Length: 215
Image (spheres, rainbow, N blue to C red):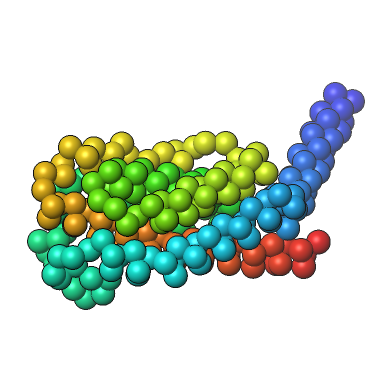
């Protein structure tokens, strides 16, 4: 009789575990298709601002850069320029990856926010040294505002992806050449970051469509 009771108890426990696994596997993983209207509206506004920045950036670069050799053509980048970037302490572009189980929507939006704050900080420092960046600075500020709205709409909290390196750029701008290099690198990186943002926003939209199709 004791053996029978133990067998029945074990069977019941296994059944509970099996049901728990089934419920977990069938639960939605907060797809973007379930995102509130505020998130979708903010994402669309972010896309519009990114496209505007990409349109205006070449003209801003042409206005403020007067040093020969500093162009938006990637093929003109030299080893000496890379050494200057290192000496100025300009952080690398925040990496935006395709959405996956290891790079979730929360991580993606947090990385967008980190990038926005990085370039807002860089442009703020550089705007104190030369004119011609005011409009771009305002667009980046608006961009960051709407990225924050995306985070708020989905109640995304801060994580390690949302952190940026502290900036010590102002103390390293000893002369006009350093200022020119810093502006050139910042605008070049901002352009690359904006292209990454466009790809990420498209990935979020595609993920929403796939998720909606499985509902």
